[in-house]
Image 1 (tube, rainbow, N blue to C red):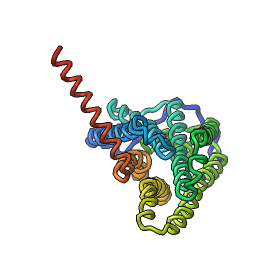
Image 2 (image 1 turned 60 degrees about the vertical axis):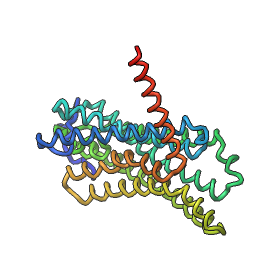
Image 3 (image 1 turned 135 degrees about the horizontal axis):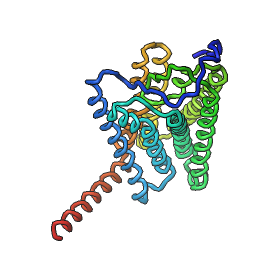
Image 4 (image 1 turned 90 degrees about the horizontal axis):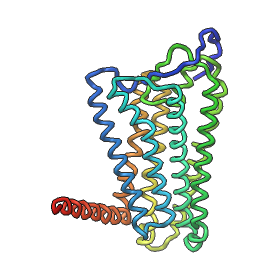
Length: 328
């Protein structure tokens, strides 16, 4: 993704909209794609909403670990909501257009929630590190004020990063080729369409990837190296299992997030097939946020119990409402 400064300024124009090419231009496939992504979006919404409601309604889940989990669920749902609804609307309307302003907005929020997701996973790793390596000081270190500050700091850094990228895209000019070979306005794809110099954009993207991607990953790996050492020092097998079981769900989510993200960028650099790049992006943009609630609910007894209780109470309320309607 090099600089485009060799193009003549005469070709530059300020455009009003882009065209999102999506996954396939085959008309017969559109109903299938619409149905599949609507299903995935509804599963993502339901799964993450249930996690949030479970952590709010159950008083014994009012701990830092579940506070961060509910924020991760909210972030995952918002991440999916920045891309899927617009894609579904476009398929339904048989249109590929997205306004220039809408494209920038989509790019801003996708970058924001993507980076915030990364920070939240890092904060959750730190929480597990304190819980296992410094259990006696856990309530002092991870007090409510610290938890709020960690979320607030992560959000501010994510917002500033997204704002910087958007401001740098605003200074670019775009030529007549306005087709984005993706199902949403992805930062790299937009920069590749520019016909003005993108050198600064490329430098900032690479720097942000190292600092905001590599930094949190290094912090997660450091936390888990300390956690493994602390677990090995525990004498009883039951104690070891109990300590490790609190980390399994988080480790699974971290692995899924980083493997899918790295996989997407490796496939996009290795493959010239633009549609295959869009398909690979589904993994971290839609599949990962959809699977996270299942990973946490399947591996965590507290979440399982809270979800059973929540779903049970929802069914009871539904039955009462039906009876009231029948008696009217």
